[in-house]
Image 1 (cartoon, rainbow, N blue to C red):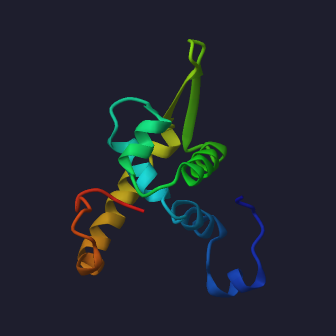
Image 2 (cartoon, helix red, strand yellow; image 1 turned 90 degrees about the horizontal axis):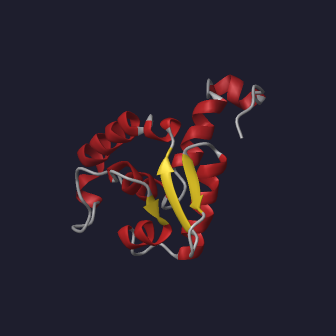
Image 3 (cartoon, rainbow, N blue to C red; image 1 turned 90 degrees about the vertical axis):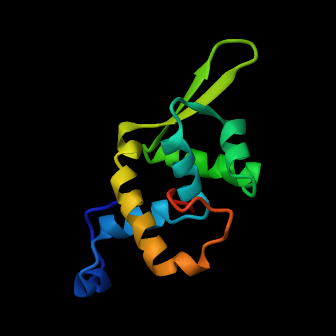
Length: 128
């Protein structure tokens, strides 16, 4: 959670607590992949659609990450009142606003980490 307080170590290092908080949030395991799937989507996605797009991600961890992203305001969860209940997930404007930053990170990764990417990864899509 972001705060207006900085620790003495942060003050000495010049580390902005908001920057650190943002890196911790988007840098969590699989969060980048989830964000990339939702950024590429032209409509809200169901849990199962996100899971199918990131096959190595467990349902338990996907559920945890979706809850975190929703709690932080990057993701919106919408349940419909049809039978059975349908739950869709979509990025909020705040979540979508990460697109330029994630694109720059992907460019940096291709340049500096390109040799370590696996052959199954799409080089034009940020991953996590």
